[in-house]
Length: 188
Image (cartoon, rainbow, N blue to C red; front, side):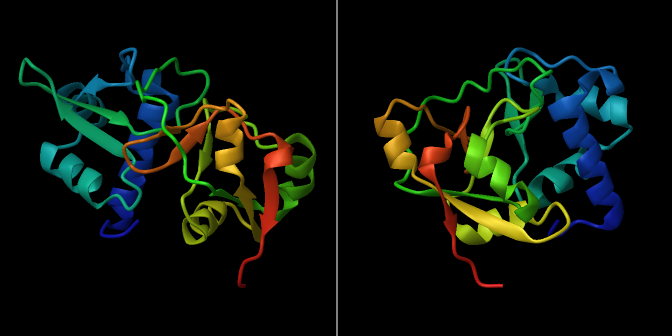
């Protein structure tokens, strides 16, 4: 993660775990839209506000959003990527996707994806990228060779599939049937 020390990366991952997957592990409860008061997160994780602000600002994928409520309190949430077990509605309106989106994944997943399509598995949505370089980065989070799939997003939208765009530019949809997928050639 650009601009973060090893300890800050570890802290960022802990924040992501709490806000995306296991808020109860830090004694927190997310509201219906995935938000929690910043003060509660800081107390639960033993962080200073300056540490949190640095991590949020320098996180290379803008994983977190902070918003000030009417009462003056700051709240934080993960921009997307919540486990299906965490009940949240990010409140993202439907959005018209670009003609094509991309999804990076380990090569070992390719046969199953081409048979069954992209499914959210343990998450609320399938995450799609606007370009091949970003899809490659996402796919490389796992070990092994990476492939990129081209998603015919405009065709999906025309057929009634709904897309959303998170605050950090990740495209979300509930699934991508295999008929909308093709293998994207990439340079090694």
